[in-house]
Image (cartoon, rainbow, N blue to C red):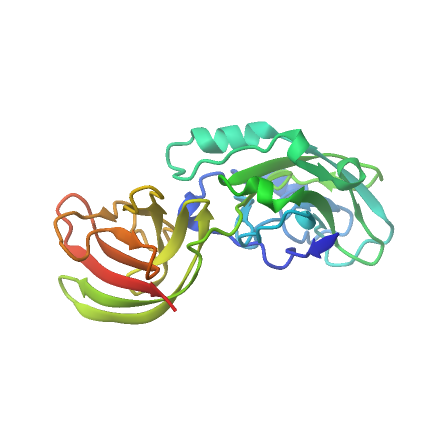
Length: 301
């Protein structure tokens, strides 16, 4: 069995429009249930800690390799949110909660929708009991699966903290649940070189840059919007026609809310050429009547 340790690599892709942030209630705050580290000496919150800077608690793993043998992942980190490590082993029981995925998928602001794997597709270690060992602050729920069985769509699992075996610990008020989404690396992922032009009303410029296109689903990749580093679009490829659909990705600056592909160019016609591993793209924003238009040739290096 090969162990893929992803506990330090869980990423937050804001293409998912993080709308799950909970309200921070004054009582919960005063009770020490919602801080990362509580200032008081007596309160010891236990939390699911998937995201560092917010309480959305939605994370996407880096795309997983396509493997037909069992692979074990450190899927869900469970954290003792105190400045000092645990003075004893703490057993925290988690419970799968599919309603978290259903709620996420039903929110119209969330563009990507996720499938929930059946129980036969994976297993979790120790009956979903996570041990935070003495001398540490974090333990992990481990999941074992064959990633080849997950290559046809994008998946997510939701978990909640059910109980803690020791007294003196408090289950977090707003970090008691979390969702991890994952996809298997598709054939489009890789390092590309993009050349083209960014038509802009005040700062028009040429594009000439390397760009790593990462798996967003089994048929789509995440790509930089023009040269706006940190802001992403999603390219979805029709495997039968090689047509490419452009849609909003990680929305870090507000610019991608209405980005879409644009028709009418004989060369930059939103297609993928599998022979040369090249995307020919034309897209723009805001829509309708885009004032910022990007034309790009994006070729695998």
